Length: 161
Image 1: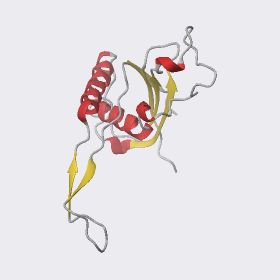
Image 2 (image 1 turned 60 degrees about the horizontal axis):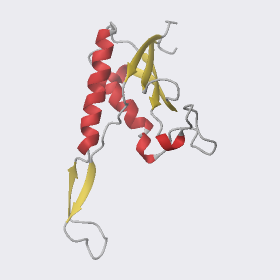
Image 3 (image 1 turned 45 degrees about the vertical axis):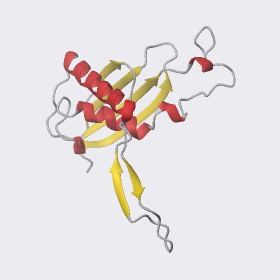
């Protein structure tokens, strides 16, 4: 089996914004559904943060010499290191006693959206088609004694028999 390769990206990880459905018109008296719906972007500032994060990942990968892999099944592991809010920290940068031990708050980002924005950034740099990722895992942790960012590991994996 191939060895893991790694990429370290410094910066603030940002989740991929998702569109939302908005109902228009008065709801139907019988079923409660609205007669018309449309998709709107709820990106706002999050969209700019996500674009900045994807560009940071892409440029870091290029600068660190990441090579485009041939079409082969790929394993991908990403550890997201998120900056904890100051209210959770003591002066020595350790977590306060009752503090959240993991970044599970609404402002910390959904793991699937963090993973998606990072994978999208690697498209065309590490792989041509993200459908070649057959095993993808992600974790979130606080960046207590390091800079926020992500540690990305990958390796080609042989097909299962």
